[in-house]
Length: 289
Image (cartoon, rainbow, N blue to C red; front, side, top):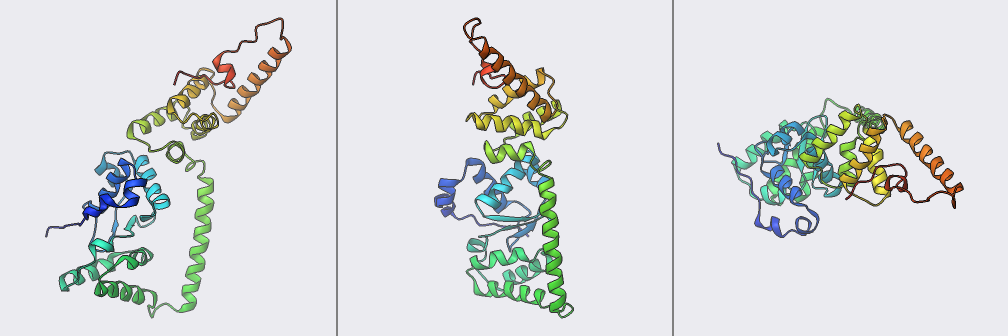
């Protein structure tokens, strides 16, 4: 049976699409609305690797786009454990017509959803009352299962809270892994294209997989108000020449340059005070931008 997904022409007139979305955002959103994994109910299971393969992007680019759609646009939500994604406003255009075939399909797909919380996000945008009732009934049956007492549910909620706390701790620890160079670039420099992703990967290899050094170089660029990757690469080249391998090496290089500059200041009048570009930028090689 053929599957059809509706994308209303108003999509292109929507203020959020017009004013807030980049071309990559629009492409990604259309993919989320129409890819083969989509379902009648707007919740479907898909991996980031699958998205990357379909779009021709790197997995890191897909991660950055997902983060943008979850936290900035607030149009989707993704469960990392079940690999399920929900299009929050799906019901507006795809759940406006009822009828037995549609209802049967909706009820069947509702049973297949693992994270029931995702379903509750769609309900407010469903215009068709019979479909909305099917969603509510399914959630009601799920949350009032006779085999689970209220006390057990409370315990489950407590466990979930504990799990969330653990996940938070993990994320804070993963600020090493998750405060990774790819995420940092996406958050501070803009969209991470496959080409830039490959460049970052190459620099990571050069610095033995140290995300910290790449992030430090980007932080320096931000402090200098030069949001260009070519500037970041200039810093990295300078470090590479000086065999910098850790943040401690960076700090030592900064101290060395500071001491050198202080020494030069004491010889004013007897020596030239002209500094090279790299000296003026605190010891980082600066290339023409």
